[in-house]
Length: 102
Image 1: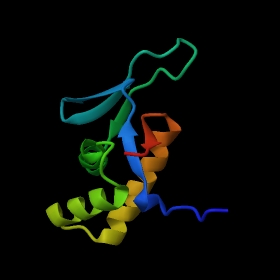
Image 2 (image 1 turned 90 degrees about the horizontal axis):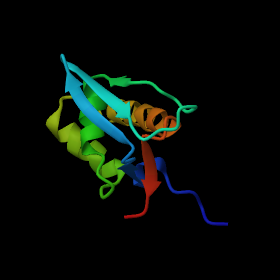
Image 3 (image 1 turned 90 degrees about the vertical axis):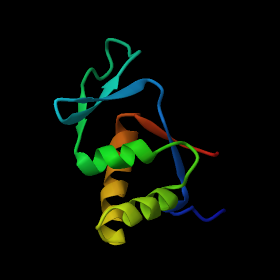
């Protein structure tokens, strides 16, 4: 059995069925092309969530995104890891992102 890879080594890509918009200072994820019986909601990301969402590109690992983010903002790496892990779980839960193998 192969050991599981730490979540920070994983690469995530945005689901093309979601678009993002900034409206009146709010950063919103909007699901499109959904079946009527599926979730029909808008998702609002806070400033940190929006900044991390913008960095998810299907090419860089979570670790690389965290390092990039920590260089740009005055936040501890531990706090960024905690916030990003929580965001990843939420985005996976609504299928806004998926793990990929770039």
